[in-house]
Length: 281
Image (cartoon, rainbow, N blue to C red; front, side, top):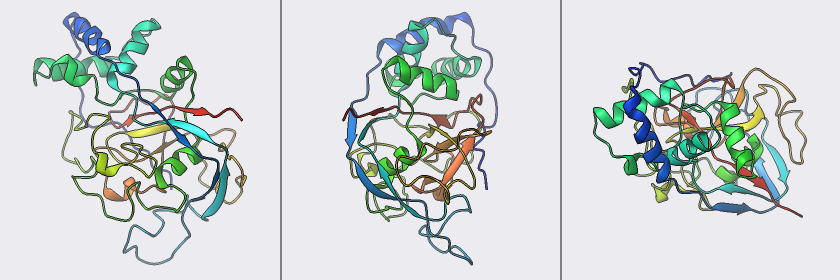
């Protein structure tokens, strides 16, 4: 089953030119994420198939995540935090790229209606980001988007954790999720918040807050045939893999093995990203 996360419902009013100084102001508060080293080695990717009713998060969500495989990844680094709104706006300005109407409208709404100051918006996760923009941002930093396998190892560690923090079911104290009733305003948290939900390597918000682009195409039947060493995903596809669930997601979408996908050109209030980097041998 391919899960298209889709955009948040509702739409913002077009932003007036008065939003431009605020965009510059948010960018001026940008702070970069440190990188976390993920050592070379094996990890468990995917979930073993189980038939019948699902009574726990231990069982597969759908038929795209089995069989469970032991996968080897070379050492790599990944951002400890999701790319922030301040960082993303700084990148767009520095590279003469336009801020999308969706993002301009959201920023103006938050400032003019909710009176959120620029400094408070800067550590929000970047959102309304296409896959191409995310990849370009990472390249500008000498990085890249993580492969789906790299993302999953970063989230579940070497022991196949159900959630980045372990087996405990998601709660509002651990992750940002479940805002099904919200139509326009993303209920996200700062990228460096919720330390209780971090992975064993100290990586934040790998479950909830904002779902994350990966570099891999989403192949629904890819797991049985993928290489056991450094799989990069199918060579082509329609959807790019998106992992981790978002502020709108049901708890099952926050599982480290649950897979989602979106069209590369999609802009969504539910999708952001973080970058990775290969470690030199």
